Image 1: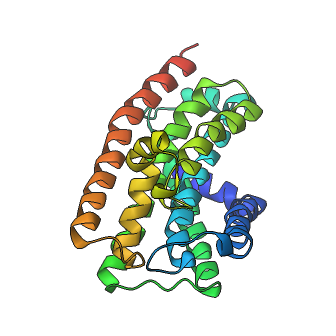
Image 2: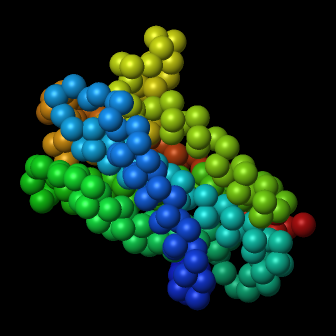
Length: 251
């Protein structure tokens, strides 16, 4: 029921979908047509290198809506009403994260459409393509729980929005999402290679067969690392968020 409630909120306020979709579309157009001519990708087209990184960035940024939604509910006093109902402590958080997962799936579909229009041409089998989409949904769900924890920590919607984005910018741009790691300074390459955004983007590039430099072994290892990152984030932030929620609503 909580998931339905949060999903209906999105339907009633379509601007949420519009603004979530506009930002990644702008990134695609800017990097594809403004910066793309200056960025060289050995052995492949830049648009095919770019789109997996944009997909990961989109679902990661989309998780910020979880923090904003929870902070908004806290500010309005809706969470206090939920506390009086006979429901699990995790129901509010689970409903919110699943609803945001559905919204991110819609955004991914929009991004795939835009990608095809600007020249993105994935290869591989239908199973690999589907596995890539499932991986994106896993990323979306995991990052939503990080945002849920942030949303419960802050005291206002404005703080939730700032706190939700501030840690994502260095994580996203100091990665292989937009440029090859080899073009970065040596001191930054170590961080960029092990950055979860880089790992996830490389896993998608391997599954979509858009980066000739990635071998089957590279793709398999990136996929394993991606699953470990997703599982690790969930193992840490699901209980942290539930504990924080209980402490917040116990006041």
